Image (cartoon, rainbow, N blue to C red; front, top):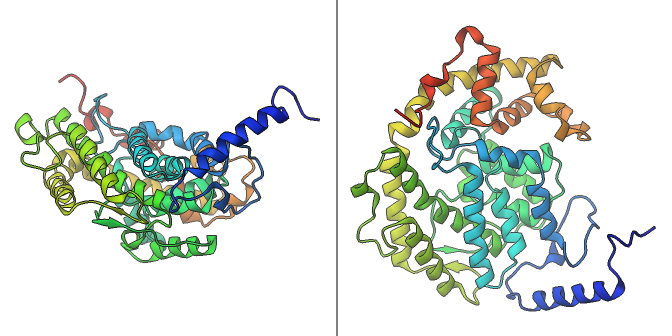
Length: 401
């Protein structure tokens, strides 16, 4: 029986439907419509307030794995500095910038938000450094590659069991912003079988993720906004811990400006100007050149710095290898007392996902390690190996020296 506390009256439903229809009529002809959403499982939980891609946003935000992003570092692990960007804040920055562009271009804003909020959830602890270490281990043990974009799709679809649309999952898979382009044009993905084939190619062909293109303009927006979100913010973080000083922080002579807020404002305006009413995203050559220039500066000044790598290489690489071997043996032996079962396979947020236990042992271990936060990883290692415990003071640069 319908509950009047939660069900709309016919008049209320008509009012909401009218507003929804009006908003959809304003969309660009190149926008993705809610009614075009494709799902693997039947999905009838809808009304004008929660159409397809709005439900995707809800399903991404309301799971325990999203919470963990707040304790995963972005570029600089091992700094006790509250000003540094964490993974969850990066997701919010990408979402905010992408929603502005999508709204201006009359694209589907909820789809854009869903892709943005989920795109980096597959990241390992310790940022890209942790990703490279886990990739080496996965290739050594199983002959397969680890990529955080593929893991984002796997985490939400297979591990967390969320019923997300093909369009959202494709946008997450194809988001990688390590390489910039002058123009972003969608590449169709019409079925989950095609999505699976794209993922499998990434598992077996190193570097294949860089060749992917989103199937929607909304996905293209997220891809370029991923770059805009970290371009200047990483420089702010580097300034906070002294990797850059005041003189080297400012980007002099760039058409985008000198600081993070100028980069985002100017690049966003130029992309919108060049993309209104078009079936692709574009920017002026001068803006593209400026983005590439700042990316190259970041690579030389920040990503190759000792602050980003030294402690990671010295400590985390052997620690992760040891944990990988231990948990692989535990999964293969079916040791239910192991933390890989207690905190992962049998965890409360995995209840009802019985098929997950039949996954490949290496894949389960990779899922577990990738889902960890920085501090959980260290605490777990020290719990399992007290005789070889790594003092936290040896890893972290304190707030106060």
